[in-house]
Length: 188
Ligand code: DQA
Image 1 (tube, helix red, strand yellow):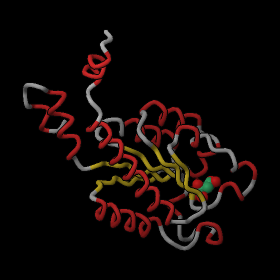
Image 2: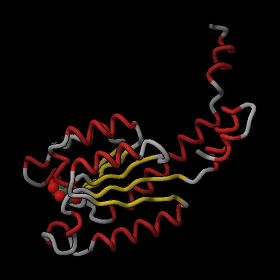
Image 3: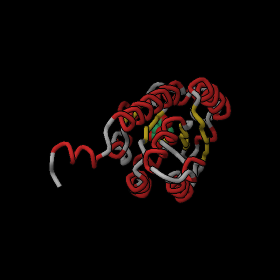
């Protein structure tokens, strides 16, 4: 918990002020076989390795003053675990679920359960490829999907999620507490 929780008196107000100034934290998840980027089906996924892509994400995160945590797994269960874990301490998720995009109700449910703003990324344009790739189980619980722009898609996702989270923090800061709104309307 941020140290501001330990201050006593007007805790809700104190927390909301601290929240505004805290660094955004985003978890970036790469699904199965993305560890082979650079050598895997280069005509579709290009020649950039996952490490190089992660370095570009980290560089942009530094510019945006966002903390990112990058992980890759070939296991659906591990991805579900990392999504659940993000519930505490993270503000949003960027995920390329890879093959699980088209099969995983569990990953979709995990994203819905944690309720964190999530951006879905695909290197290739899944809508131009085989029909089984046109369906994403994740799209319905994501705030957006970026597909077909290669590694740039991750950078756009990071910028987009950063802007989304910054705007919602700003909105929380400016909107009056619900009790005073009720009082202003004279309702109980
Ligand atoms: C992918 C597209 C998926 O259909 C595929 O299974 C992948 C990668 C992409 O980034 O283009 O593994 O998510």
